[in-house]
Length: 150
Image (tube, rainbow, N blue to C red):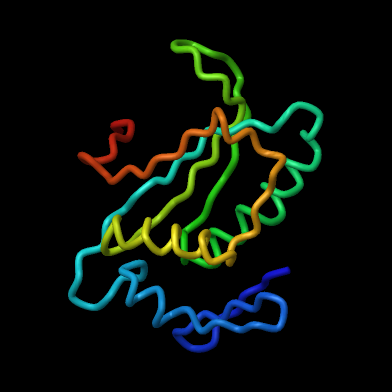
């Protein structure tokens, strides 16, 4: 079980009995805006689906473990999941979409930090996800946001 709290400018993440002071780690990895540096707004998207017969376990892990771990560990602005309503084009088999809101100095440092945390076992994995169809990608802003006029 993981939880986090803020003390001053530092965020502490408690995983079991291990406490990580993450503000310096995030800044050093290019994940936290540093004074004088231009940060980038990004979206991490994941298209996924559960293995047949493991739906309840998959959704429980994704909603109560996976999303909170990523958002808290990597200082994300937030994340939300969506369920497919209708297929319009293409043949992707994934039913679920997660969109993570990220602001960081360096996209590659961000991905490297996520990969290192996953490889070291710092992130809770689930074997209820169908990894054969999973699609994950990181996007940076490209152009201004368009909003209705008036």
